[in-house]
Image (cartoon, rainbow, N blue to C red):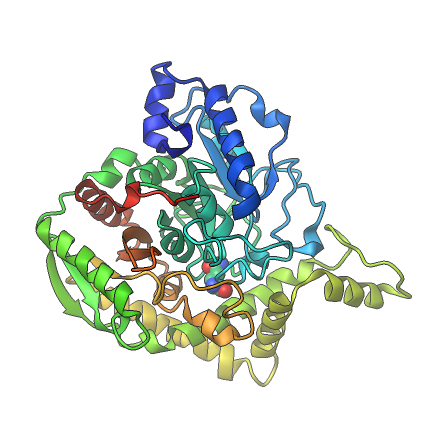
Length: 476
Ligand code: GLN
């Protein structure tokens, strides 16, 4: 048995029956990382020997080795956001999700690569290095949670955490052939997640099965007084998340998500997935989300505005890097930020600052907020009749490393189908639904009503019960 291909569910059963030791599992994964990570480069850092102490508690995930995106604070363990500006930053506390995973008995393997401060769709904006797609090492793993998705796909962990502001869990999950869930805004505490765009950010699981996503959600979801946007609901129950009756569900296909720009092979795989859902008894109908064409522009105003404010704190005074050789405080700020931030982060700070500046605020930021309300309204309308929406996760499969770096606009378009769920605050999951002729994975996205993760997870779980795309592993 290859330990590194176990699901969280399978490993949990073996561990609890005493047929597998947590140390054996942990070391098995470490060995796998040693073998494949020099080629994949999913990890920024590996947890030290303290991770090899026996897992705390007898929780539901006792002994399960996980990877965590490096923008989630881990006490004493370097948290860089893949930025030079945070080099050497060791948080004095754990994010709430980390605290909860530790209480449930998880073992932390290490921290995974991302686009700097989660700004990007390929990990090429990482200030450290680019991660490679395990299915084709010449291609990107997607982003920004590319390290987490690649680690899961390559068998370098059983599951991982990512964060999703405009698609950063779902798009890399699609590119790497794994499952990625962005929960409803407010469902999972953001305390200890380094903020990019606070009204859009959510933490969620990346794993191989929908069932594993439910097991992780059971642990990380639920109200947290330390996050003022946390919703006042108790943690979700994994069994309830997976057991809704799928037969008779009304599933909408938003016409705007199947138009121009969609790769024909992606379309074919997704439509095949839709037929599988029909076979499970779902009723499929075409719907319209008319404000979809404005989503990318709206997102890049709201997200950059919030980012420009959130990133003001990296000034050389409190965290990580401080430039040397300055005359006064102002020059220290300028030098530190010029040297510490990468190009994309600077671009976004400038765009956001511009959108918020006097004279332009109404024309850009305020207008974007109004369009955001219209986009949310589109979803409210279709969810009066549909329980879920099915779309491609990304218009294309994984692209080649280097192909889009000079063209930020094309890069931004790879999130065209994922961004709206963040603007509307609704939950959405990406599930592997096939491969292109070149052997690249394709992801199918299911979006649901706010706080109705149960519908999309039950659909995804039923889908995985009758398909086996999620069982395929890359030839590494
Ligand atoms: N790719 C999108 C961006 O660059 C989304 C990133 C994210 O979800 N963190 O902003």
